[in-house]
Image 1 (cartoon, one colour):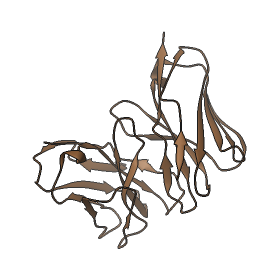
Image 2 (tube, chains in turn orange, brown; image 1 turned 90 degrees about the vertical axis):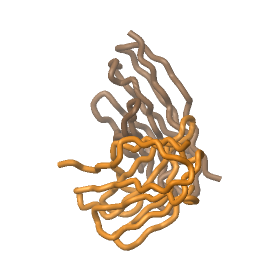
Image 3 (cartoon, chains in turn red, purple; image 1 turned 180 degrees about the vertical axis):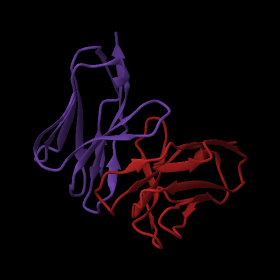
Length: 113
Length: 109
């Protein structure tokens, strides 16, 4: 079982360009999450989805958008990248919404120049 | 505001025991998680505490005191592969996970 996959593994992006980070899980988990991780800071929640068809804003949603058309996929889009969005992005999922163990994908390392 | 505090870095010797502390102030409490994260990799689940007391799982144990807003992760018989960051996270009243910045544990031979 693959668990959670993310693509691409890493990317260099010019400021002002758009990009979609992909996340797919095969565990039939209801809830999915996008985090960014920066040196010296804890994981910060960008957006989440408690179930297919619904999404919510996390702690740092500005500059990012998500969609949840089905259970398996939860893409994260940067409409117009800025250097402050340079980070490591992790997608995670949990069986149910709220309070359950989250399982993480391998991450996407993004550098915005 | 919500806050989770952990030491930034700790050093220990192979074969020894180390305790990593975590204190939290959150709006409500619905459980505390510990995750392990090796450099360049994703966090992986270690333990979960929702009631006061000690949860033991092999070489790793986790303790919780809800009245004190305090937890610790105890690692015994340290191995070189235990060199990693250890992340403390608390589920708040909205069932959102609030993450600490993590403790980088360095194991020396």
